[in-house]
Amino acid sequence: MEINNVYKADCLPGFKNIDDESVDLIFTDPPYYQNRAQNIINLKNHRDIVTEFKFDGYASEEKYLQFIEQVLRECYRVAKNGASGYLWCGDDFVSYINRIVEKAGFQFRKVIHWHKTNPFPAIHTRKMFANSMELIVHFSKGTPKTWNYKQVNEMHNFIEAPICTGKERKKHQTQKPLKVCIPFIEISSNAGDLILDPFMGSGTTAVAALATGRNFTGFEIDDDYCKIINERFTEFLLQNPNFKGKKPEIR
Image 1 (cartoon, rainbow, N blue to C red):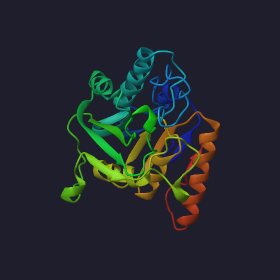
Image 2 (cartoon, rainbow, N blue to C red; image 1 turned 90 degrees about the horizontal axis):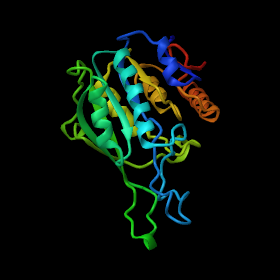
Image 3 (cartoon, rainbow, N blue to C red; image 1 turned 45 degrees about the vertical axis):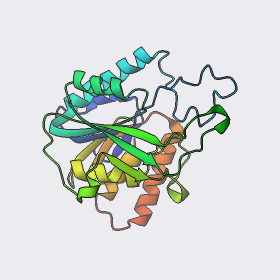
C-alpha cells in the first residue's frame, strides 16, 4: 500500500494490504451509531437530536460494536509498538469504546473532550441542552514512544474550538476541524511518520497529515466523500505550490 493515498474501499478487506507494525499513528472518526431519536415524534431527523450519522451497516448496537472491535484489532496488528491512536466517539458509546480498545490489545489512556463553541442550539421546547461536546478516546500499543510536549495549557484532555465554518467547511455532516485534530497529531507523531485513518470521511486526517509533514493512508467507501477529499487535496496543493512530498491521490 502506497503512502498518501486514500483507497476507495471498505476498510476491513483493505487492511489486508497494510503490513504488520507499519503505522505510527491511528487517527480516525468512525461512523457513529445513534438511535436516540427513533421514538421522538416529529424530531427523528432534527439535527439537534441526531447530530451524527446513524451507522446503517448494522441493525443493532451489538453488531456495531462488534464491527468497531474488528477494526481496532486490525489497527492493533498494523500499529508499531509504541504507536498512539485517537478515536472519535459520541458520549453514548464512550464507555463501550474504552473497553473494546483494551479487548483489541491497546492500552486505554484518556478521554479527550472537544467543546464546540458554536454548537447547534437546543430546542428549548423539548428541554434539552445544546450538544456542545464530542469525545476522543486516546489509546496506545504499549507506552507511547512519541510524545511531543507543547505548552502546559495545550496538554489538557480538553480542547475548545468552533465547528467547521467558512472555506474549511465541506458537505459532510460531521467534519472535524483541523484546529482540533492537528495538536494531537503533532503530539503523537513526528514528521515523516505514517498516519492511518480507516474512515477518511471528509479527509481531515489526510489534510492534517500533509499540513504537518506526515504521511497518511486510509479508506473511504462513499463516492461523495471521495469527491470532497479530492477537492481538499487540490486546494492543499494550490495553497502549497512547493510541496515536495508524494502527491496525495484517491485510488
